[in-house]
Image (tube, rainbow, N blue to C red; front, side, top):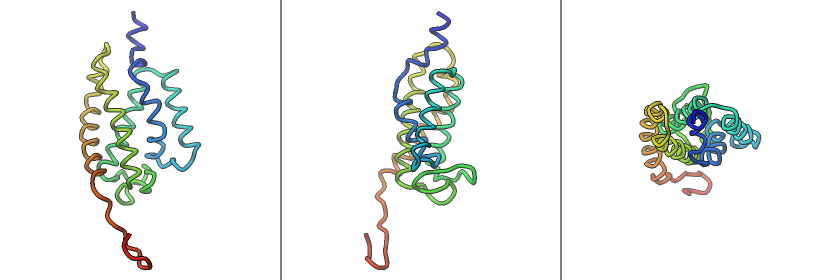
Length: 159
């Protein structure tokens, strides 16, 4: 019974391991490099195969913070990176950043909502991240729904 309780987090859903590596690599500014996506995939795999519930929730907390930074407009500062929009703090996130953050945010939020069905304190421990992600996902959906302003090229006009 103890091993089942301790490892119950492993049976929630496969979406995080399928969806997060690409999205998180993009948010970390490594999307253009296949090795960035592969490194993120290996990290997730390591956590699932050798990690604990605590280390897994720690990783998902990092992802939640990345998502929240994009939703807030990318004002993280010198250390953080974004993909298509450039380094965080270098202007608003691009459409690719918003899309990646929305995917990651929805996946982690769904995961954290499912924790209620597991034994132990994980659901309560993830409460702050659920609240953060709920606000961030709402904001990202709003950002995604806004039309992209036309760009003006002096040689060809508006596009």
